[in-house]
Image 1 (spheres, rainbow, N blue to C red):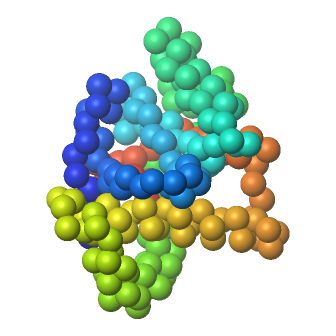
Image 2: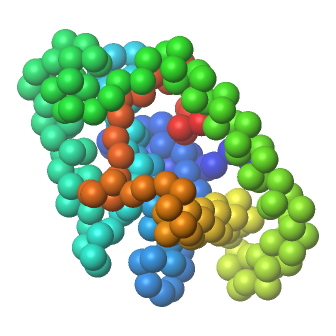
Amino acid sequence: MPSAPARPSPDHSKARYYFWMIEGEPDQLGWYGQHETALPWEHWHLLTFGRYWVDGASNTARNALETKIREVLAVPLANSPEALAEYLNIPAVNQVDAQHWRQWGQSCAHDLSSVYREREDALRQLYTSLHASTYTPYGFGEFFCWYDHVAYAHAIDVLADAGVLSIPEHRFVAALWFFDEPETNGF
């Protein structure tokens, strides 16, 4: 897939993401996702991953942490990523550990995405059957990103129901993460 289109905002000047509009219920967008907030230390970001909504409302615990980080950064209460992580009681994943996670994640992603590659023709046929396929400039990438969001949300829930992974009480996880590659998005 081509890179996601640039979609900057005042808070995220380098934002790039796919966006697919649908009619329907919020859970048809996929209910898990990652947010990334740049920190004042080069290469460091706050990452949160988890549920967008809990019991039909925005995930207040996740939103509160993301708001708290902005408040803490406005009145510097920490002079390093490690000190900030300690203040927030979340882990700080340093450069070496982040590189190991990235390598492992890329390996897993390659294996998992083989399912999509095997079914590419069917996915493209599904996309071309949609009215939006006739007018969207980033069409297939936008559609596929939505499709993947819904698929991995279901996969997470199936794994949790099977006891393979556990979902945290507040339905999200957070960490300070070192990215040494530009415009990275997790892995």
